[in-house]
Length: 367
Image (tube, rainbow, N blue to C red; front, side, top):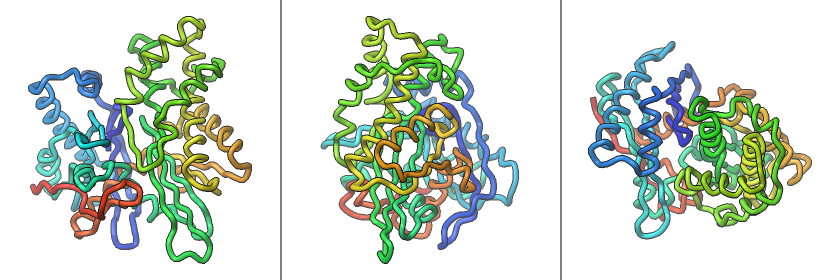
């Protein structure tokens, strides 16, 4: 799995079966700087067809090298490859999504079938093509008698709400993107450091700043936050153009780089809480944070504070506290989707993606 943050590849080796998954090993590889620069260009629409094709194959070879660096455990029998999203516009008659990374190289390196291109089947059935980790979240984190939210903090924040009333046979499940998580923070850190930093590590810059409430309130009026699910988003809404507007508004107010990072961090936290209030029906009992953003203590604390305002009984934990390293959850989810695909089982939940029916997700590349 490599996500909207465009920072590297997360790999998970899992034992899969009808009862779910067990994590065996987890590892990650950072993108080389030159590849990361090309991925940013692709996400901005700045590559021509030849350069995009070259990146598609170079990225496929990089995924193969990452998987081959497995540190422990038995040889895999199957692989799921999400690929790198460089475009995602799921609404309207011209809906489209594109994930780069040729799976044939991974199939050749591992000599096992590879399931890839997961999102398009749901999109073709009228869905958003996202979020797709929902089935895995429900399988691994649902608790009878509790309302649990699994919130992944990648470049974009997405939540799976699993409300399982005591006595109910099945939980009520919603899943959708809430808006930005790390993407604006990473872009701002890169901009303010002239490319020397890729992120505000530990939220240290944000911790030194002050939140600009008037700007924050303006940004929270973005229509995506109030749009009802199913919904998904990406860098098209909350990427470079959004940051350019942020910096333009910050300049006359003489905000420091620390103030901008503090305000963007608060935007992530409060937009999550706003989505919960508008779209979940009731406050959750427990929120489980996963993804790279859950390693940012400043962001986690602001999310805790925002959710305390929504319901004093909400407890916030990280997936690492439950035995799943922060960046293992998303790749494990696509291992689960790959297992479902080869067993002929649908992987999407139409009530969360908006698809007209359950569909088989992914196309299979044989070695």
